[in-house]
Image 1 (cartoon, rainbow, N blue to C red):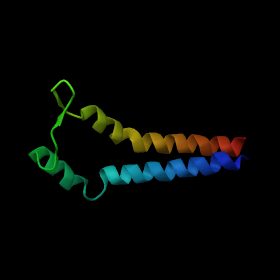
Image 2: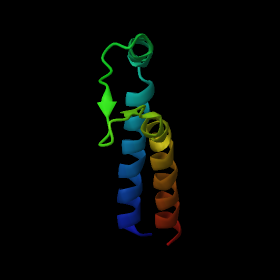
Image 3: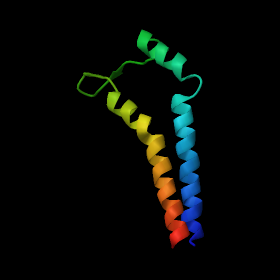
Length: 82
């Protein structure tokens, strides 16, 4: 049993759960509606003067919590097996 893996795995699981909760929490519906209407959404301009949509960043943050939870579970299992 490796305590380091267990601790790091538990931290990743908690952080992944927090990210998922923050992304899909009770206020997510209000935020999505505000984004659809264009409120509270700053316009980003790249160095070349082109507008950036930010869709790739939004897609990554949508799966970031799940990835953290899965990696945390892998570390916990490795900590128990080792």
